[in-house]
Length: 253
Ligand SMILES: [Zn+2]
Image 1 (cartoon, rainbow, N blue to C red):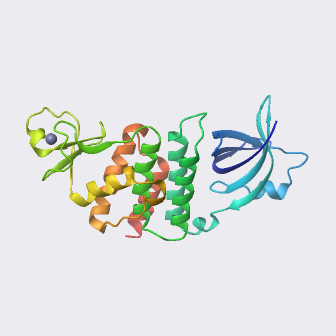
Image 2 (image 1 turned 60 degrees about the vertical axis):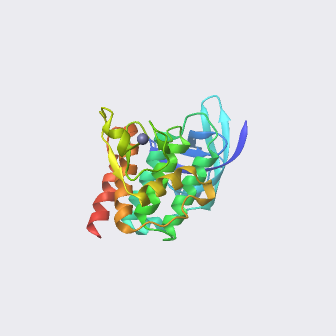
Image 3 (image 1 turned 90 degrees about the vertical axis):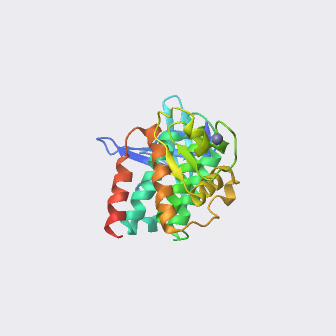
């Protein structure tokens, strides 16, 4: 069966015979692994031009031995991200997280749009790198079945008390009054009002609006540490691409 499908390349690897294998995120089929056809329709130049981060329109043969890519037409290469090592590291971190969090064998249009929008904003310098990172991390969790419950305190259900705390391990809020009365065994983090507002915004707004809020630099730094912790609970270790991003990020600060 032949498929025409748009997808972004999350990963690629080459075998000994220079056979290229790609991991794609597609809207219709979610994440799929496919190899490039070496002979026949696949032109060598096309093969060379297919890169990680690129978004293409693929012709794919769905056979007994898996997916084989016959041809690809570029929709968006995001090539300019390669000129900035910090942006490139962050873009690769987004791809790595996407690979880990997108549920298998499911349509993934919203995940695909989140990744494409984040890469586009990063390439065009529309927001700071950390801002895009926070939104991406928290929204990805929410889309993937790990949405924190930030409606109100988990015990008294109050939407907002003077001080609210976040429990990343449980993805929950607890207010200062209730905190006094329970034995809290997980790490908790005090939330300022702008940080709680931002987290609610990222989680509950429509897909098209999630980047449309403002936060100052100090609050953003704190938000960034929280969204990283929220992700870390599931990845269990800091991903190598995130470490590289932090190295560049600190270097240029
Ligand atoms: Zn409470």
